[in-house]
Image 1 (cartoon, rainbow, N blue to C red):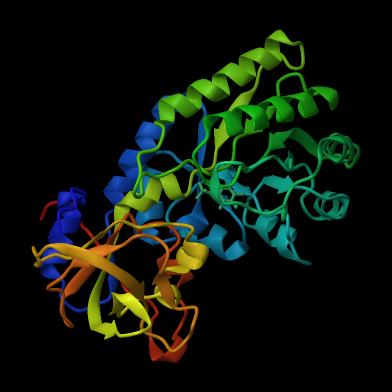
Image 2: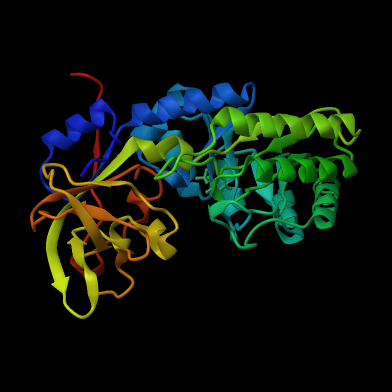
Length: 385
Ligand SMILES: *Cc1c(COP(=O)(O)O)cnc(C)c1O
């Protein structure tokens, strides 16, 4: 199959050396390189890696070495960051859903930055995180996102203004505004619109130079090209300048919370073909069953939201269309039915199939053992021996 996509040399070396499937080959150096690119495009913005995208210690350590901060959702993620050497001053608790004891636990570990989106949570922070810097999360439009949040988080503008006031009244520092415009967000204009709204909210709340946390969402070229970081940075810059010109704020200190954009291309999921079936009367396509599926790390293929590039190393035959499915007895465990997939016509049981750009939202999403399969082993590439 003529697929031009190649992984890093270090990843190819892992794939050449490691036979037992399935596993995720992971190259922390790729994450560090992506970090540098995004940080350069948005300089002098501060970067907070969204740990949930790939919480592997080797990735966290590589980003600590780059000076990255971290966006976390639980005290377990805080501990992972601290174990990797992160400075607690650079950790932000970005999950406004905090249960009893969560804010206090984060605070005890040294975290002083929190994101909120409800009056109930502000009251909790006032008691359990005295003196903390708090950003209010705004609900924004997410057109252009492959995996949107469907309104789970964020306050509407008037409520966000009220919450910033409540933060201040509670003796906390109202630091600014944040949003998440949906993951795999391909439209720079969606960020620009969100920035415009966020700075209007900040200005109305009396913040002349707010922190403006742009969240995550920065896209990855899975099967199609995406706009470059510079294009997104220019859109954001334009919206900030317009807000300054319009008198809403005097400026903004930017933060980014990239997840996917740093780690997706750092991973290759190597799988093996369990069976290739013809299904007369059911489907004209071959069905290819792999030893990985929805429950071994491919959660983001739900609704076929993310279409990973595929390749079949070792087979060079002409490609033909397939349905790609996972190994379990669950009817949902079909990876791609609508997304066009072509694999070599000479593909056989026992052959290898790689899913590329699978470093984000895979290993930590795998089930512990549904139907006896999983969890997904991770094999980390090392620098040259
Ligand atoms: C998941 C998440 C991110 C990272 O999103 P990506 O789309 O992977 O960049 C950033 N911030 C918050 C609050 C998140 O929940």
